Length: 616
Ligand code: ADP
Image (cartoon, rainbow, N blue to C red; front, side):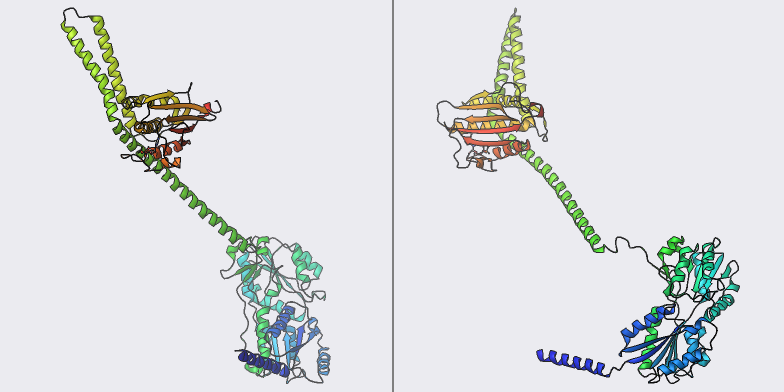
């Protein structure tokens, strides 16, 4: 493997060395129009040089000369210029001549015979009608561009249909005069409602004045201003910039070298495209191909391009632009420079939104589950009450039988008394009163039983815990009596205001008392007592149920609150589990412990309702 790599590297090195060894520089004589810095050709020359760099196999030795005579009519000195070039290259002719722009093209065609006739030549950046086809030799190649003057004017009227005047900026050198006549010939007759004015004979200050005071609905068409009406020469882009600074109308043009600041845009010729093509043609000739054989189609306008800043400045809506056009120099939106940051923030926000919606969904599910759990525990509590009621049946029956039996006995006594001729009305009244009292006792038992067994949803109300405790004791009193257990209520003075569900809290207390009765019933102590205490403890109401039974026979007291934990043969082990659920639904706590003197104590604390808080 290593051997193969070394072989490849050696081969690459030798190819590179061979190329440089054989790569003799090619000498290219470049002839500029007017001077090296005149637009638009300067941009064409720069593009050509860049393309040489990119495309050439050889080093290219570019030697620049300018056809300065293009500025004026007197061509008499051109012969000396040709001789000068001949003398310069006396030691060896260049490998190629490149003429950039129409004036240079005219010059080389004019002097072809004296200008290294055997050296191939490329005419570039020249409009096709500026090439004298008849004067082309088979040693010449052409990379021409085409100026479609009607299309350029159609562009102005498309963007500004209200245009009434088009001022054409053009100078007074021979090449500029040619184009002046072309505009007059090709465009002027086609415009019915638009007046054309030419500033070819004006001084530059006059041109600036005119540009600043054009009538409304005017446009300026910039061709070129190389030599103005007074003979002053304008190199580079200063003239266009000045006009742009003062002009009261938009400026249009035809070449991308004027695009990017002062002109609105439209269809245009491209220096980059021409430079690329010209370098390609030149290098093929330098490689040995015959110039005559290289036919290059005339370069035409690319898709129209517009400067967004100019469109804004002159209120030109984008809807007026041709469909295939491109708008450049738009101010970058926040998106362009901060694409990654914005994407990241958007992703984070989306992620957050997704998380939030998941959490909201989860929360809703949890609430639903809580409601369902509460319903289930209410149902379970209800079942538990039923079970308890079953256990209480005997005492309830006894509780009912007592008043009912008394009623019967009283009713029979009353009936006997009524049979006598002189019934004792006073006694009868007392008997009826007894009957009424016993009846209401019986109905009270039934009402309590019904309230215990009713299936009601969890309902928070303002309650007095003392009252709830009293009602529960009353309810369980018969059972306690039947089981020979003494209930010792120690209810705190005043009220213990809490918020809660009366039936469920009754159930909890009842559970504790019944458990205590069960625990004591098995014990063999002389006095079986269950104490019930209520009290305020800080912000809480407390209720405790204690017994003197055997206590909880476990190492962990909280085990008794686990579902299905029971030590009773018939037990379900749900009573205390439900009690804890109910107490916690009331934001309270329940705990169990054994007393030192024996027996168990269960304590519940519940938050006092707001008005009672803080009082103890
Ligand atoms: P169950 O009464 O059906 O057994 P509970 O949940 O009400 O179900 O009680 C669970 C267990 O807690 C009882 O079986 C018992 O062992 C114990 N326990 C409850 N109260 C007392 C108490 N006062 N003294 C001793 N143990 C008790």
